[in-house]
Image (tube, rainbow, N blue to C red; front, side, top):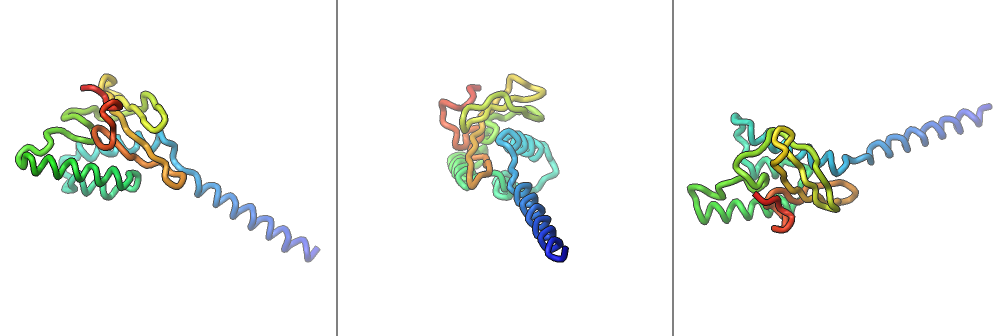
Length: 154
């Protein structure tokens, strides 16, 4: 009897540790990452009281790749140096000046996801996902890291 108690305790510890490991390895799905990112971005854009710049907002995101960050910074810097007053003239992440209040998934093809506006279903946007160490990251949106042929025509 005295030997069974340590064995039971050991089994319980093993089960508990495996349960915690399995639950901590669960990651968001590609749909969840895509919709959460773009809807968070729209909320950021609609927050007129924010003092955080677009680049700073993206830098603080943990669900975007470094490639996304650097390409956005390159595009914005280039546009500002070409036209300091106007800059790009549209939002490169949304590839538009006007946009819906929220998005949902319309379709997915390998690494590309097309979302559409819930309140404006004709408005569509392509996002690109990348898997890094088993987690999904946004690697492109609008004109950021999205090839011309994959962008939604406006």
